[in-house]
Image (cartoon, rainbow, N blue to C red; front, side, top):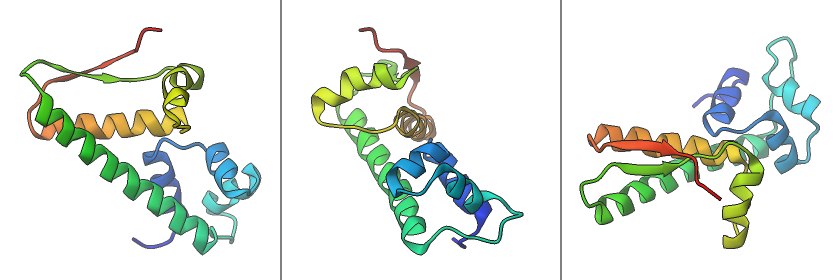
Length: 132
């Protein structure tokens, strides 16, 4: 994939990350991240940030595939319930106890990717808000 501003934004958004998320992970300010996506600004993202974003996307795809394989191995014919979170605080209640700390947008984007993979296999699913 070519390193372009539009591709950077598309990959970031497909990962469910905000410009602020990228800023927090890379140490760049939000304004700098914005400039990496702004077609009127001549600055592209640094190679290491581009590589990090591609790795984040590839990891998401791999995690989604693994989740689907696990679902398929344990599925009993019922509709699959996919947890979907409204806020970072709700997700933190679940993930921090497991030693995981990822943005809610990233989690929900991966969940949507799992849903798409299940749909391709004609497996019924539904998104559910976990109850706390």
